[in-house]
Picture 1 (cartoon, helix red, strand yellow):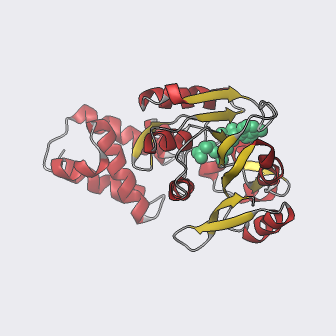
Picture 2: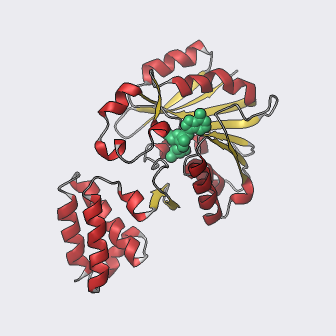
Length: 280
Ligand SMILES: C[S@@+](CC[C@H](N)C(=O)[O-])C[C@H]1O[C@@H](n2cnc3c(N)ncnc32)[C@H](O)[C@@H]1O
């Protein structure tokens, strides 16, 4: 079967479970994975002929995808800020919104470390920052052993493991008093228990709840960041974190309560999704 034909078939099948724009992208990702090509290069091979056993392998991925299992878990790869990262079940799949966290950090032009990242997950935030700025060093704290192992694997893959130090532990608790950072960055769990119940089954059935749910309010980890970050930030240090599309009022209230200066960053739909905060 020709690549072009398979691509069209995949798009049709995937459109049955998701909007057409995602279906197109996922069809490209599946084929690119098996041809070992960057996704957009697939179009250059659209007249190539694929052997039957390869088509069968691709079709079995499609069948599993139709059960609702997210594609990154099936392929073991996810793209973040234009780069590939390993991903596996038990570790949160990085989301496109988190790229806003990276852009806001880069805009603040923080040249020197050390930087603290809380809740590294697959490691995409810290590793991307290390790749964008070869002078940075990052300390990552993460509670899940599986996530720590995956971050190590991704750091080795991107050759930044010498600048990324990882500790297994609970949020700020592994840090010593007086340990100061130029910036703290985090994509914390920020859903409430109630919001978790409303999520799509493809999230609830496959992704780790403890990576997404903060507690009854949803803002518990963000409040902990605002309360404790001053103990670990250098003078003129910055705090960057992600927030839910519906959390702007609550986060603004907390920013004022803990006396931070702040700037919000929006996503493409106009929701405030990232906050950068600093003390004067
Ligand atoms: C929303 S995920 C973000 C993962 C990754 N940074 C990303 O953006 O894709 C939150 C991460 O925080 C971790 N986490 C949850 N509670 C934690 C805690 N008490 N201490 C350290 N890490 C925690 C979770 O295991 C998860 O990896």
